[in-house]
Image (cartoon, rainbow, N blue to C red; front, side, top):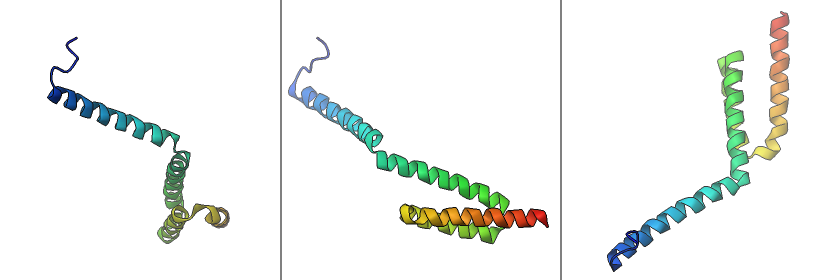
Length: 101
């Protein structure tokens, strides 16, 4: 029984370590169960990927406009999705016109 605290000070230290471990475990579980936060993280990653791809394909001013749009999406994603879709369609049409010329 060497794991058992020998005095009150060891017991307090053991208690404090156990509390820290439990807090870390509960925080990790809370993060895994926070679906809204996980969806937002996934959305942010997808928007970043789209920004990088668009920056490679279009001019710098157009890429800057898209980046500004992504910041608006992050601030208020639901009403802006339709606008982003329209922007992507517009960019696609512009790219088609440029390649046809």
